[in-house]
Length: 158
Image 1 (tube, rainbow, N blue to C red):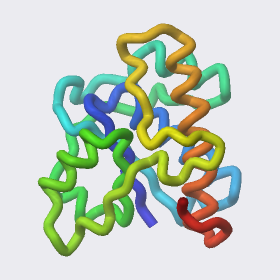
Image 2 (image 1 turned 60 degrees about the horizontal axis):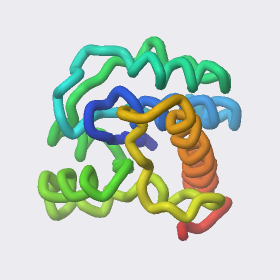
Image 3 (image 1 turned 45 degrees about the vertical axis):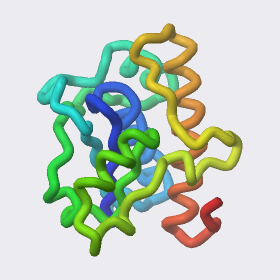
């Protein structure tokens, strides 16, 4: 199983989701069976590491994002990944327009896996302060836990 997390520039939300999910999968003993990656709908930051504020917030919770580099989503990702998770409706709409009809079933919103949060979208913390990066982490930890439960058959989607 390979999962791709997608946001706009691939420097805040999607690399955080990737880092959180990778760690949870590894802790569950599934790191070899479930792969994770992230990408952006736009190529603004290709080759750059995650935003320093993203890395700092993640590091306080034990997530190391320093080795990640931004990349742009490619049509071939529809073939490479079993599940493609958009951080918000705009990303989902962009990806839906790109998706071959036979593969559009792979697209979902990340927050559809959340249990503690009712929001359907992960807000972009880029223009906010440290508390917004913390809130994004809270949301993505919740959704990543729900995603892992879903993939292992422990919990239905909402």
